[in-house]
Length: 370
Length: 173
Image (cartoon, rainbow over all chains, first blue to last red; front, top):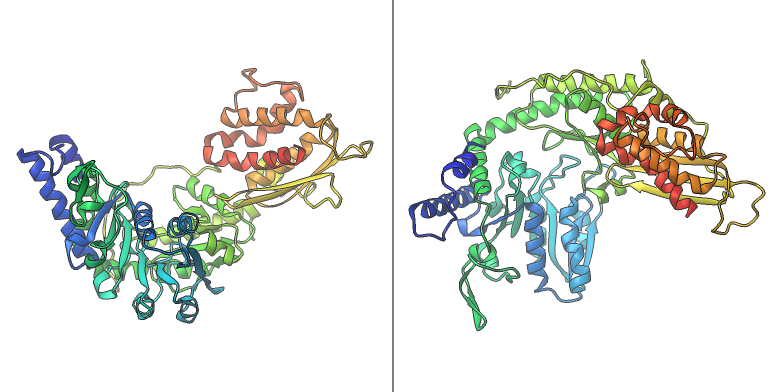
């Protein structure tokens, strides 16, 4: 907020347009944040970082561009764990490009394994689009193994890193991910800013479908000379205040450090898991142990929507519904679940308060003693 | 042992309330009088609110004097029932709906629905005389809608209350 306020109050120049000092200064700041993001996600080079409006925007950009290279018989493989934003942009290509979208099914525990993945990777598969961390089960698939399996069949891998980015460090180069996307607001930054990552040599070949000022060296009716990646994918004025906000958010996370974050989240997860296990009629979605302190569940006799409203009356914000993960809920035969998603700024006292509130909700909706 | 990461926290200063759930609304939601499928219903329809997971199916029987199930004309509703996997607001509204529409003609149903919608946006509309009273007196409606008075502060839950009525409208169309 401070970073955004400072820009909006004192330095509102556009980046890379004017020759005056304030324009140069903001341009330098944008590239500094780009480099910062590259380090944060384990990218090799800042040119692999494209600014977008968020994960969904990034996936749409990627799907549409990659779609230009697909043939009618090609296939995209996604999974039943995915957020709608990692399903819909690919599904749209069925209509626009005639490709086929398939999905890796999940087990009753809400996960898929490499055998199911292997069965579905075929000669026609061009992209595996998978999540780095489920926003419902709190589980992370075996990323290195899945990516290696896909690469062994010359299949590119896109990683939806929206949920993962706040809970463990991304190592995109080490994992060999070809593309990835995440949103600033999921890692304590502002809304309206996100990142699409692509390996340098892949971005250099990725078709450019949107353009305008800022993305070209030269343009006219006679032809266009695009800038090199990532700038060729960033037409128009970037969300400058939001970029600075994202940079400040990453500073914040780095200051605390992943080791401390991981240890505290593990402790919180265990604290909440133990408390939830003592609530009769509460069923967790996914295995009890998870990779992030994120718990979706049903509570017998109380609709998740009612639960969320009750929690709101107690000053606690939880989600209810299908969390934009319709395929997962349908696979598990669930119309809706409630979801508690914690982060490193939550406390054990809050975990205890959550469990107390669940007991109170049971008394309120079902009567005492149930 | 892991060390807590400390932050300065502001208390919300929020007192616990019952939200939109009055005692009468909860009782209405638990009522099973109108729950169940009507085999050979004259009309039925289903609907859902995919955003929250409410799903409901509504069944209608018209007055036994009506032999054909054609459209046109205003038929009297003899019985309405429902099956649902839904939140307390939706279930309560479905029960209220079944109570209110039984015995009235189908063209009056939309009027009751409109009045309920106005009431959910502003529970004072009855006192302010801004509601049509063709289907029931203002006093009757005030009494019937009373369990839902607190829903007016929860705009995201109004769709839960209106879902059964929208499905009934679909069944009657």
